Image 1 (cartoon, one colour):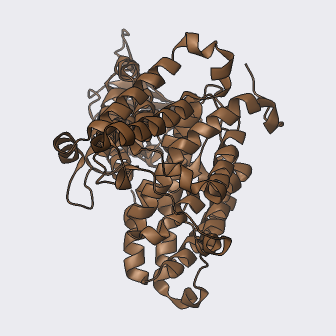
Image 2: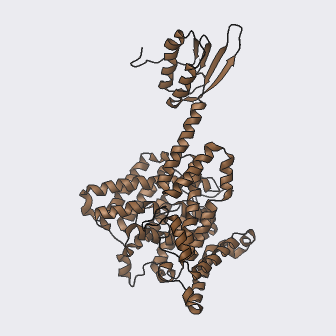
Image 3: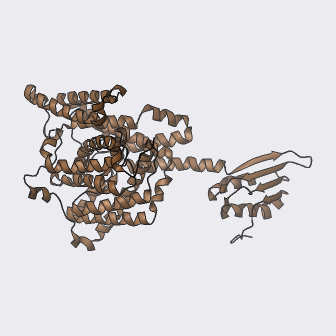
Length: 525
């Protein structure tokens, strides 16, 4: 099955329901990340602005069919520290604009190629880890314990708790009303995921997540009437800022403080944001493309430019920095989105709902939204993924598992870095072993050993080739065949030449080279 990429409206019957689900996922995450990033309830709307920009602006400009951008939990610590350093949110907005400019420059300089250098085992480990993280982090919200912000991904929390102590607290301080709402919500989501439900015409267009939210609102109103002790309020609900007038609504938007243009810290923070946001985006692009049922490839340089323009726009009107986010992107895919129209729709609904119905959105219990995120987490970390990776062998499975453990015990970028170290070790190990083919033929005049070099022989193969040459038996005949190699690094040519001219004669080894040219040995014999 193919998708018409030129006409965004041709898949609207799939993209609109998906965009609505992504909106329901994004709304609490935008608010949660904003509160955690700034520590100021009066700046909650900065997360909504970033969500709108990520959906509408980045959505239009991006080449990603299913990637969804918005404020990311991975930038929370950077934003908090930046606000402490700069002393004002407006000065920070200038840093966001600078970060966007740097991302555009990076895209124009083709820096997006970095995204192709993340091994598949690391990307799949990241997806599984985010799935587990979602489950562990959303269980407290499903139990009605909302001390931590929705969307947090880090193991250590700023309140001194961590992922596991939060689970114990959730059991100790659980809310009956929240547990009932989340249990009913999960039941509905499982029901809506069944094939027979998808055959009903109404439920093809109206997503199960919408029914879950409506049911959660209805149940909470029912509790308030019949069992007031079970009713949820305050921190257990969506808390979107509600403006009493048009003037107050427009006051939610902020402008950068351009008088801070001479502050060196602004540029340092801008550079940090650009690097971290770009890395997170490129990782999510790779992950989203792997989840895409149509196996489309996102142009990474164009993505960096789109993200850069998004951050420039977000910074100019008072929004947090934007990156592509895997939780929203995977929700988009699971909900049947087909083109980037679903991303644009989610951003548009964020804008319209913030304009016209903010008070009604505050009736939504976080327990309902936690159930939706629990399902997203489950689908990202299914048991079949672990089975498939195990069957690929330890060179794929070990980096995969290490990445999961590292992300769960630290955060996304640190976990990816640790996983990359392990993956690179296995790549070097494999490269060390498979730099050549070794043949030994028996002849009357003596054994002939042939080393046929691989297509690509780099400095990484120096160790294995040098060790093999050192261990050749004295008095043997050896043929080193490089005729099938497309490239042989200078380092390897130097080792072969030095062996042929100096080491081999001393050990009475006859050496013949095929397809290997001589090189000038700098500082050699």
